[in-house]
Image (cartoon, rainbow, N blue to C red; front, top):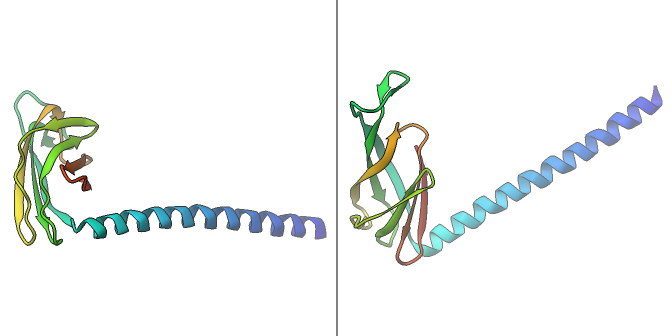
Length: 137
């Protein structure tokens, strides 16, 4: 009985140490990303993301999929954000996008290469100055 108690105690300590190490790594990665965003002065917030239904695309949970993504972003930082390229679900769309200036909202329309639905999209935008923004819908 004593050996079982010792084994469980040691096992619990090992698991607690492993979980603590994993959580510490996640926290430091989030802190580094936050510091990078604050240093560049770019702080964007997604207002909405929608995909207009298209007759040639199937439905997803009762809503029609489409090929035109409309994304609205608000810049509450101190530096304007002028995306040079936008990546949606690992596909790059290079075009001329509007500049999101501090304290304003800008709307982007992206013609997707295939049918998509707005929940579950991962949008990654990069401006010419190297600032990066990732948004998940």
